[in-house]
Image (tube, rainbow, N blue to C red; front, side):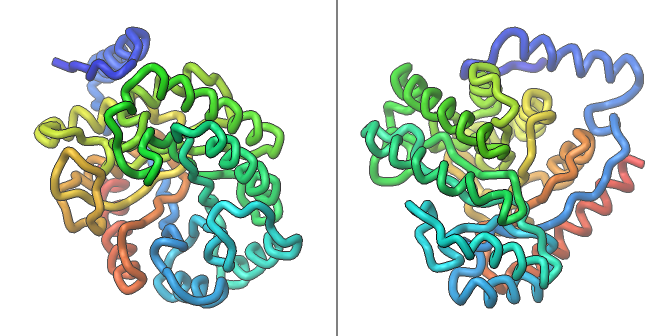
Length: 322
């Protein structure tokens, strides 16, 4: 029987999940047989995968590895990841150089600690987000990847005992609300990632945040390797199906990496851990996902092999749903 974690997921969401599964069962379908799929493009997080070289050299390497798209980070062009200002000619240069290599800019990195205990740090992050969002049209994308952050002041990717407090949620939600307004004004979309070390550490909390903010400019990045709390790996199928039942229609970016244990975020190369990629990719296709699948937690030398792995898995998933 389906059971949700007590993480803020509302009764309405549980009823919707049960209603979905009941309707599909009555029609003889499963969650994995409800749509005709379209194959998404495969890309990388450029800044964390190809770590050295000029912008052009990094795009050359991505092109040689066979990716169709990238998530751009401003540090690929010699700036801080979240700069205070962006040279006027840089966004057009990024767009031209990517297009010249047949690469789409799928998204840009806009992460900062939205739950930092110092409110001035949150305000600084919002000012820098506004700078980044303003140039997205010139770069050629509308998607900005963000994280909800943590009370840990040293690292926005590290957990903290206070992450589950009402105060942490209040500060995070207020920051996300301001960020969503920045995105609205820039005609951009923010995609936050449920991640174990952050305040939003589950699909249920992600659904709660979406409902609370209520903005069409706030969407989701899904990375299933980041969803499994300690002791939850045996429930992988249930947790993945719950995540897509709650968030499937809100997903605009998808990540591809792997994990070898629960209780922490995954850091393995896609296909080299225990994540059920057959299930993950089928759920993406069932939910009509056509956005990018972005590889990360790998080196430039590993990209080509991982692209081949994902293409084979996607082709199988498409055939299985035909």
